[in-house]
Structures are given as structure tokens and as C-alpha cells.
Amino acid sequence: MNKNISKLIKLNNLASLYFRRKHIIVLDPTEKHENIEELNSDIVYDKVDWKIPEKIRQTIDELSQNSQLSDEDKILTIFERVCKEYVYDDNLISYIQKIDDDSYDLPDWYGRDVGQEWEEKRDEHNRRVCYEVSRYLAKSLMELFKNNDDIDVCILWDKGHTHYFVGLTSSKYNITLDTDDFNNIKDLTRIKAGLTAQGIVILEDNNREFENALDRFNEHRSKEAIKSIESQMSNNIATSSVSEKEENFDSTNTFENILFLQNAIEILKGKYNIDSQGLFEYMKEIVDIRLGPESRKKIWKRLNKDSAKSIRYIRCLLLDIDGQKHILDVDKMLLREFDEEELKSEDSDFVHYRELSRDWEEPYDGS
Image (cartoon, rainbow, N blue to C red):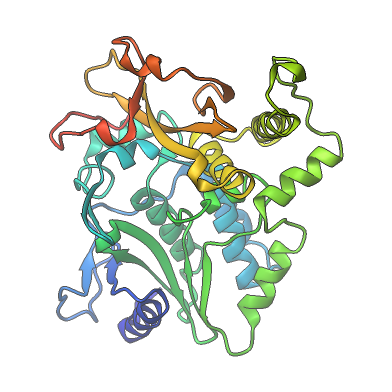
């Protein structure tokens, strides 16, 4: 695959118009390109070599030998494979610093500029951040289409959002592929839960070739997360029941809301084996629709606090359900009553969201 820089620049311009934000083109440093005479601030080589995980390589080999699938279907297959294999590492969010209304900062050592120790630790689990999964996806697509000079792949860097996602350009279409769009339920979660892919943006597709392939991919998937849960509840998939009896609640509505949320949790962890971050995203959207965003607050939960080099924080939800406090503990994957006095205990694992302050020099080894 020979890089056509003019095509990548066009792709980047289309993406910048669509997202209304300027992006930087990021290239694989293992592939130096003779036709790139001079890199400027808008085109850079990445800080880390792009690699294909062994668990993804088998899929690439199978697709390379499949002459029946279209290029578009192969792209979507790789995208789906990455989404199903990895989960989002939300501990990263505890390090993000807000610079302005729509601008953030993050230490480069958390995924963007990493060494061998970090990568070895990451091999021990499947939690990843956007820098990592974007490299996997981009490198996999480059390998799949290495003999196709019409297709070019890069990473687009939204520096203000400290975010990587993948761009792909050809003579037929220009698209972006984002497995972990931060503002919505990420496709890392949506694909696992049988929902439509929402992180793929078609910037240009005159003959609707990629659009038609994406429509087929999404055809039997639910677009709305809460509708999918409601449908499964009506089919008696949920088996959860609240621990207290209905008469212990102030109203039938309170009982029904708690029962609904508990059943949703059971479906997500039972049928889909969803991760803690995915459960947080999915349930936050359900809460916002069913109870209203004013009914919930984010709260940190500290994990492996006895480890000096791998203290992790994940986000949970503190809920006000008709005046009753409950916590959605995504680590234990349960909804229970919550007394805010717990937060005052020295042994508490929970920390008020705004009270957590991370030192950027605080050691974290990626484990």
C-alpha cells in the first residue's frame, strides 16, 4: 500500500468539516514513505509502532483468502472483530484534565507514547484506550489491503479531545471508523450488545457502496439501547428480582423503576458478558431516558488500592430514584441502596467525582 498523501489530506479536510474540528494525520512510523518529502504539523508519524495483535491476525488471514466478500464487508468485519475483542479502559478518564469548554489534556504515557513495559502489561488484559485500538484497526486494514493501491488508511488525531480514530479513503468513498466515540455508547460496547454501529461516519460515497454495506451490517441490530432491553424483557429474558418486597417502596413506580434497572443489568452481564465500562455507558443512557439525567451523578470507585503502581478508578452511578439513594456498582454489576455516609469512611472504595485529583506523575503501569 503506497500512501497517497493528497487523498489523505482530502479525507482529513472532509473529516474536519464534518466534525467541525481540525485533525492531524498520523502515520505508522514503521512505514517511512519516500513520497512524503516533508512532514508538517498537520502530518506526523506516530509515537509508537503500529502492530497487529495475534488474536486479530487470524481474521485478517481468513478475509484475505475470501474472494466472496466485498472490500466494504471486510472493513466492517475487522471493525466488528476489534470491537468484540477489546473493552474501554475508563481508568484513563481519571487522568484527563479539562483545559476549556471543549478541550482536554492527558499525559502521553497513557497509551500514546508508551514503552515495552506498558505493552507487556497490556497483554495481560483486554482494556484499551483510543490510541491503542485505533492502531490495531488501522494496521489491520493496512495489512488486509496491502496489495490494493486504491485504499489508504491513516489515524486522525483530535488533539483537543486527546482522541485517535481511523480514516480510510479510496476512489469510491471516504469514511472514518471510531470504536470509542466518547460522547455516546461506544461501539466497543454497542457491537457486543447487538446494537448498530454508530462510530462509522461516511464522509463521501457517491455510489452508496459503503452505505449499503453498513445498512446490511446494521440490518438485524437494534439502534436504541433501551428499546433492545425492553424487547428482551418482554420476551422474558430477564430473571432478576429486587431484594425487597414491593410494599417496602413508597410507590409502585419506584418499585418498577428499580426492577427495570436490575433486570437491565442482568441482561447485560448475563447475555452479553459486558464489561464494567460498557455497563456504565449503557445504564447511564437508560437512566437518562427513563429517570432523567438529573437523577444521577457519577462517582469513582477505587480498584486494587493496595498496589502502588496500578491503582485504577472506574465510574459508577449514584442514583436518586424517587428520593431513594441507590448506587449502580459497575464493578460488582449490581444496583443497591446507598447511604452517602459510606463516602466518609476511610475504608470506602468510593470517591466523589469532583474530589478525585490525579497527579500526572502518579505511577500507573498499564496493568
